[in-house]
Length: 250
Image (cartoon, rainbow, N blue to C red; front, side, top):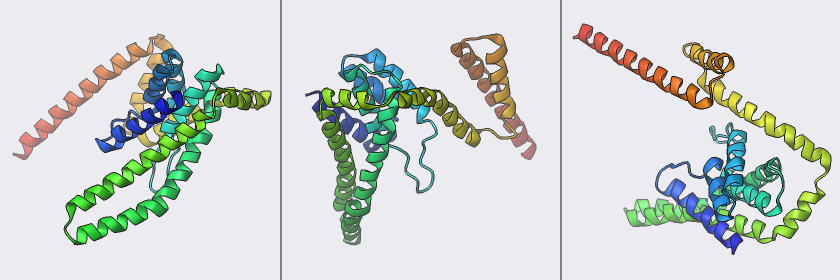
C-alpha cells in the first residue's frame, strides 16, 4: 500500500507540474517532504529534500540535454532512507542512479512512443481536428507520468528488506565517499548556478552578500532581509532613472 501510495503521489505531482504550468512541486525540497509526510517522518523528508535540492541545483535542462529526474529520485531516495533507517548520505546513493535511470526510460518513450503520437497529432492538425491534437498532447504527457508511476511502484514494491540488504552490501569506503560528496555537490550546484548569474555588472552584489554573512555573523534570515531591501532600493532607483530618461525623450 505504501508503494502504491507513493506511486500515485508521483503520478499526481507530475501531472500537476506539467499539466497546469510549472509549479516546481517536483523539486526535491517539496516532493521529499511530501514523501516523508506519507511515510510518517516529515522531518527526515524535509532534511533529505534540502540535501537533494542542493545536490540537484545545477542539474538543469540546457539545449537537448536531459537532467536527472528529481521526482522519482527524490521519492525513492526518501522512501528508502526512511524505511531502512539509513543515514542522510545514503539518499544520494539512491537518488542519482534512479534519477538517471528514469531519464533513460523517458528518452526511449519519447523516441518511440511520442514520435508515433506526434504523427497522429500532425494528421489531426491537417484535418483541423483540434480535439485530436488535444488528445495527443494529453496522452503523451500521461504516458510519461505513468512511467514514473511504474518505476516508483516496482522499485519500492521490492520491500524494505531488499532495500536494507542493498544498503548493507555497500562497502564502508563508499559510504565515506558519499559523505564527502554530500558536502561537495552543493558547492558544485551553486557554482554552476552562479556561473550563469554573476556578471561584471552585478558581482558587487554577491561580494556584498558574502561579506555580510562572513563578518556580521547574521543568520540567513537577516541576510535575506538585507537582500530584499537592497533589491527594492535598486528597483526604485532603476524606475526613477527610466522615468527621467522618458521625460528627456519627450
